[in-house]
Amino acid sequence: MPIVTSRSVVLQAFRYSDTSKILRLLTRDRGPVSVIARGALRARSRLSGLLEPFAEGSATFYLKSNRDLHTLSGFELIRERQALGGDLARFASASVLCELVMRVAPREADAGLFDFLVAALDDLLEVSEAGVQGVAAARIWQLVALLGFGPSVTACVDCGRPPEAGRPARFDLAAGGLRCHRCPRVGRYLAPDEVQALMTLAAGDPSVTPSPAHLALLAEFIRWHAAEGSRIRSLDFFAVS
Ligand SMILES: [Zn+2]
Image 1 (cartoon, rainbow, N blue to C red):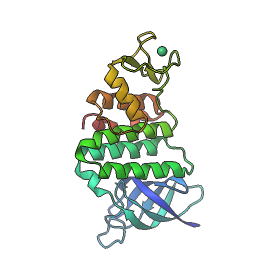
Image 2 (cartoon, rainbow, N blue to C red):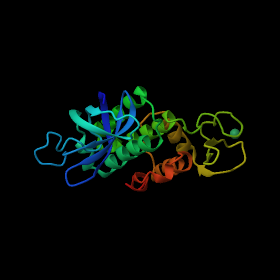
Image 3 (cartoon, protein in one colour):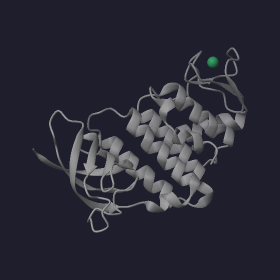
Image 4 (cartoon, rainbow, N blue to C red):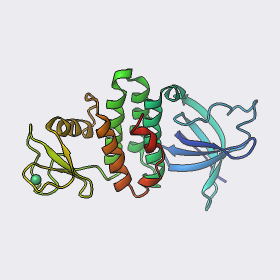
């Protein structure tokens, strides 16, 4: 069995038995992998307390060919990020990022996606209280685009022209983006400032604080367009946090 070491981030961790945990990792070199950490829940385990969601480390595991579950043998911690759990908005947003990656990311290695995810988790950790929602919405819209189903916000989904500044627009969920004021009124009405906020946040600029309606729209968009969006349970508490 080959031994592999890769920079990894813990997307999800759950108890498997009295002493073992199963982890979903995003690795930088191999994409998403599942590993079992035998004995990790024993008090004296050197893995004890390290294998929590959002933690980043250098993971070493035995790669079993033709198996979906590999065996973790080591985890050299790089950054733990447990403070994300101390604030509901940060925790909910980090959970949506990780769950989206877990459900939707392709099975192969994607270093760009890995680097984006760890930077986004750091942003959520470091942003001031007032900026959390802006960072959350901007990074989740960016991830959605990286995963291949970003919304169309700079060109109307009907006529293809850019939405006109200072005008209201519609968000056409089924068509996947903005519908300008010149086109038939299908979808949710967005006032001019809401159109501007959507364009700003979807471009990855976190300087706007999204409204509760914006966060609800983002959650709805993911459920509609991600193949497994309806299974992303953290969306349920993200839009209300
Ligand atoms: Zn149009």
